[in-house]
Length: 181
Image 1: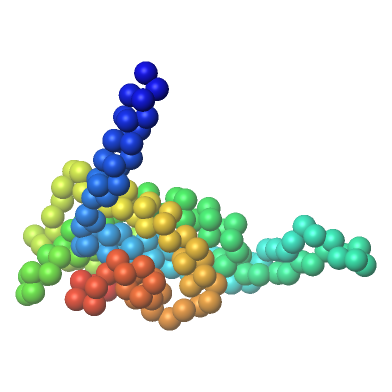
Image 2 (image 1 turned 120 degrees about the vertical axis):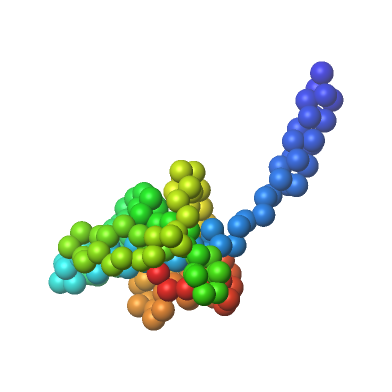
């Protein structure tokens, strides 16, 4: 019985290694850019004067603890909570086809709170009932796989965060695939 279980285990491992499906570049690039767009929008809403104390739990030889104040929007705790919930907003995005170039990208079509509604040519949006779930899943994968890069780039105040994260750091977007959200 043990050899059969062992053989089944090896077969499962081989199958799992070969099932590493191809990622749709438009979907994952769109998910990355939408993730960055939503993160930056939420971070801009935070009062820049709000700070939190961060530091280590280690006590120095003189009996004190090192604590620093950092802006709330750049704290690991805030960013972690934000990243855990940000992909829920992918329902506000749709697959958009540029009428001139036929280039496909994901764009926000739903207005945000207290922002004017900007009408797009809705004939160029593709609304598929499964699409938001797919974009949400891709967003969750991007957030999970690249959380460290996201934290690092946000705390460094990098210009063009979407380009830096999605094109340079993660290689999810190619130069020709990206468009501004």
